[in-house]
Picture 1 (tube, rainbow, N blue to C red):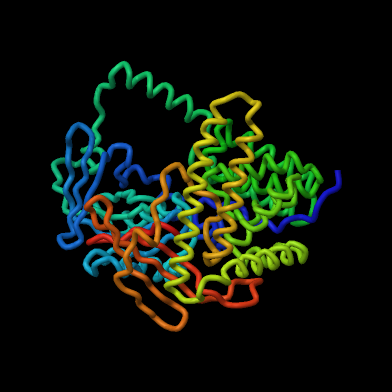
Picture 2: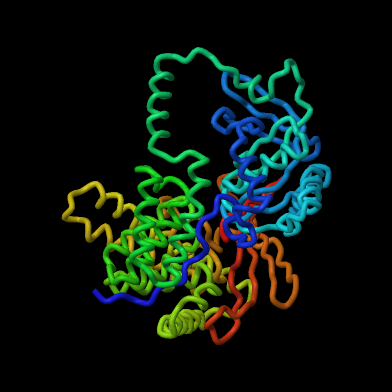
Length: 490
């Protein structure tokens, strides 16, 4: 088979702060974070033992409901939060009370005093592992009693805890989760867990493969694809049979797909790119989707993967796409904007038109999702119908994003397995705030069987890359409650 031009790969996966190329494995910060992560169990309360948690900002008190009807009350400080892609320092979050972010200020100052400029940034791209490592490091540096990463929707709230009564010389985690005699069922479960753990690399092994990842990356950069593939194969073997459920599998599959594509093995490349999409961290979905657009046979799949790559990260798309791909996206954008000619170009009418289109998308997608579920439960004869329904949903989603949404968002189709909700006829606009000529916020209220639901829609007037004219586009959707706002759509 004939190969295609090599895709520009991102830097190899790093255990901590993978997007920060200034951090090397020999640096003091990397070593400190690695050690903090490896010793995290000494300071961090495990989410496996915490059934639920709640905290109040005014009092600064957190209550954790633990196993065996135990409760833990403590003072808490918020070091930062992790939204799945970026780490935000607590003192840079305007929604947090000043008295809750003093530890965040202290640890940032300590890190800056040691020359770690990462602490000077308000937020940075990270992984969940990065966030846990940084929380553990903060707990050690500030000599906190313990720390806790509390899940809140899709966000992790990273907290240090204090004011917990000490009753022995043991650590808080040792005292709360003291060993007990396991039941026969628990013993069996422990055996199964240990067998699964044996198939996976431990933390030290994950740290040790950093140099091998760089070796594969260097071979790829000089277009020695055979050597790159050989290293990738050996790394996959070292990661074990369950590698798809852990880092750095995403980067490995992405590198494997790009290498196979460069060698002309397109069908194998598709499998590798799809595997990358199912792993925890894919690192550069724009590259993955552009790779899929170059390797799949169906023209429909080529197009919506191409559009998806642009929607996800338009700046990255401009860096890595060829002129033919850019021209195709430019034509699609112009066609999408032409379809909006009947809608007045104002924030309110953009909001109304977008919600109308989104409701129609939800309704059709919900019907297709029912068909998909039915087809999946039937024989292989229906596979093509199942696949066709899924592709139809994907294509409609990308069309919606191109027409109404700013670039730089998740272009992957979410679950449309429920009845549609957002609709302009159901929501009443309570306030329209023009922040400036290019930024607008619309506040709405909706009655849902007696419960008042409030939403905040952020719109910006911008000219997306490759588009010829600026447009009002939806940027974010928030669910607004008395004490917090939850980001629903970005």
